[in-house]
Image 1: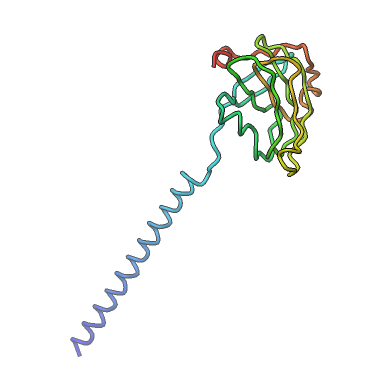
Image 2 (image 1 turned 90 degrees about the horizontal axis):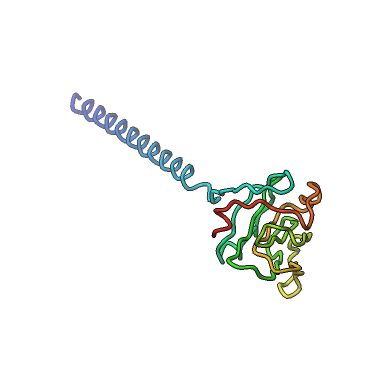
Length: 175
């Protein structure tokens, strides 16, 4: 009888140990899941903004200064914050042509020369799914070194127009 009671106690102890191990394993899995979510759950790249000054107004811009960054631009964005956009930086002045492939936010683009003077501003319509060969293009009227994309109507709301100077930080101009 004692041996049966002893084996029942051993089974109970063994069951308790198994339950505790199971709880520990579940806790470890939960911790790992939390770490994964915290560290890897947000796949959005961290964005760095530079401040430009135009006619007493500030624009906070990401810089597109490589072939890859200029090619992707503001593609696949769902929205842009007020006063935020992207400055496209080129090594030398040239005539520029942009399109809105996979860009779902309506934009305005200011083409800016080497001295920071806006040559022209164009309203660009969001991508509507049509084939590449049917997409409209948006061009500078002169050779320029920079193009500034902002939410559509931003320049007009701020009364910013062609001929005005954009103050671009020297560290960006040197790129």
